[in-house]
Image (cartoon, rainbow, N blue to C red):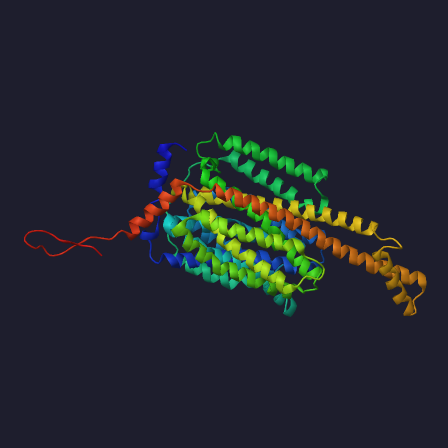
Length: 550
């Protein structure tokens, strides 16, 4: 970015809507209500999948399309959300998202077979896919750089609280009533948010594009579909599957073509030129690394609690809720501090906490203390609350207001791809490590080893209960096999937490280089304008006016 563009960016950052609207914090409340509903839905559906599978008469592979269809639709829509915002305006797109998501939720609750619920989930995803990018764009359009930290910290409450309540709420609803309620519960929230948006949502100025970049739209749609679909199937088919590789490489090739096309088009559907901005690109890199590393806590820890500690889905959700609430409390504090001291000090502190707490998870055993696990998870979530929003906000602060829509679209696209890739990579790594540990442990069982002697002792106990020797040996082998699988599962988790520790340490190093004079000047100059004492004129004395300093 040349000097002229930098100065233009500084000027454009003053074109925010905070002083032009009534009740800006009411706007934030409406935005948070919609986002909370959309994020809550992602957590509740996962828990209800087994019940849906049984009632709708679907196989496990078929019912996964309830999740896959939603994820793919979002992955296709998020990259082009920036152009659509510029075309129709953030307010109109947000209202459309609320309406579509609410309608899709009601229809999902009425589903009568697998095909109907997959189709209705796609409708729901059309609303959910646009919700996060347009919500972030509106907040960055409303607030000047020196207030964005506080606003994004409050916005982060919805992002952290919704996943916390999702599993517990879903487990309770499925247990006491029906999986259909997990969709119906969105309807009253959506209706309230929709009415408030229609009555009070601010109309943001936007540039009406006259022509769609058709080639860019097609390459983006098909490319991200192929990439995300291929990655999504890694867990079942593995990285070496020709099916998986075909989709992933097709997606990669199409996205490379997309880059060449978009850099040559005057009005691209995805403006990749925002990546020329150092702070913005660094924020994408850092938050992507953290998103991948945080996967082990969000996805693997519930498996440990349910498979090893014997928790129910409801108890697991309740166990993880305090950590998300702690993060939700810390986020507004972190946002307020960001407005004062910037992102780098908070990022270094938050990532130091994440590195240490993640490393603490590498020592999990079959008999780990639940209180110790919960304390580590709460500490880790506090670190996340101090890190994610300040890093993301600092990157967005250096973009001109006119590029806010494109910036939020690219931010959410990268987050979506990084989360999917991280899930596939770390799941594959953990599975491989689990198999290696199981083979090593099984190979160490001999007649004279401690494990072999334990096997003989178990067999003798079973025989003493009147079971035939051959059958007792079979039961003993089954018990020992289950113990080996549990132990290797935990050891595989420990190895995966080591990888997550390394990734968070890498993010810590990146934050050391995450500072920009331009971002600091933008934030501080806006704050100085807001805090500058105003001079008031006193009545003239002897023909002179005397200024009074407030």
